[in-house]
Length: 441
Image 1 (tube, rainbow, N blue to C red):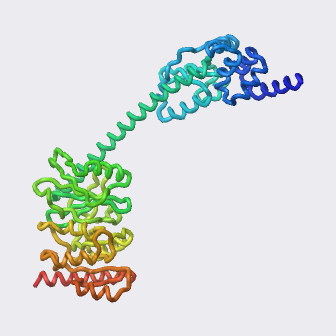
Image 2 (image 1 turned 180 degrees about the vertical axis):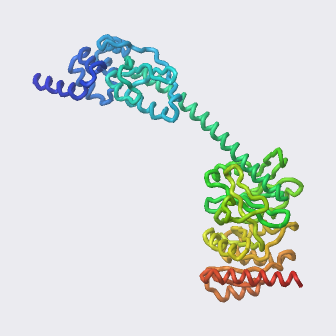
Image 3 (image 1 turned 135 degrees about the horizontal axis):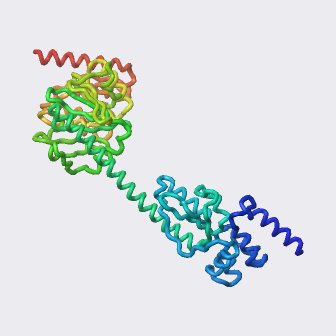
């Protein structure tokens, strides 16, 4: 029986006592000298966590943890660390968290001087060589897991506080960048005689747009990498006032969505049509000689890419962003400048100001949330200022009765979305020409 116990103990030492680096003392060897083998077997059976073996062994032999580690330090001929200070791992930058997790796993802490590890303190000095921070010849001392764990907890608080402050600094930097972007947009709109500008987003693509003093719609794209930060910045200011040194108080208003805003300033801060509608086409890079031009083309601060201005504004009221993108490309090829609204309520907001330039044609989907196409058509035709605007009604249904009812209610054309899109653009061109003839008359 005793032969079997001894054989098992030799197998245990072969597994846990490392022979490759005899210069590092081992807690297993110290336990072998300090406690009976029966106790060792009980300790190992009680926990596979090497960090707890010293505490368990002390309890089995009836001494305090401190007394046991003093004896273990003498047996291993290493110094015992009883007052451990927390280590500032933030000097290792982004690796701080991974180093902290590694130290906990091994049961060790480190002493750092000017960014260099000068000593390792471990429950089992032999395990120190598994640390990525370990270098051959580095001094290693002993401490109980209780003392090391307290030091690591304090070290983690330092890392957490640093990360929190870093997050605040990063948030402040992003806020400053967003403020700078808004200042650029306001300055650009003001330079063209505008007193309001909209920031709108479709499918994650954000744009700013405004109406120049010549009645032309100018648009610009905002680079994707700053879109989310910019929208959060604007959303945090919703229903508030943005103060600008150049423009004074800038009023911020949501356009019915967390990603669509209007900013108004100056004597025309109530103007609701200086910046009209939603643009969702691909950004035009004015650095490209083949791109569209404006009267003052430039790319500002690397975040904004200006777009062009077009004649013939046409309002498209539809809640399907994919259909809007396709329709926009087709209309722009025809020299038409489309702007967009998700539903009838937003469309009326864009049309309600007496001083704004009205669209030449309105394209309206029949089925929409909040206010559908039929309700919007009724509102348009009952408004003396808007009733003369030609309206093309769209639907995905093949319903002759609905078509007849809408035409009777004042719609100028009825087009099915299932037809060739060129049918719709042809209707737009027909109504635009009719409007030109009417104006000439």
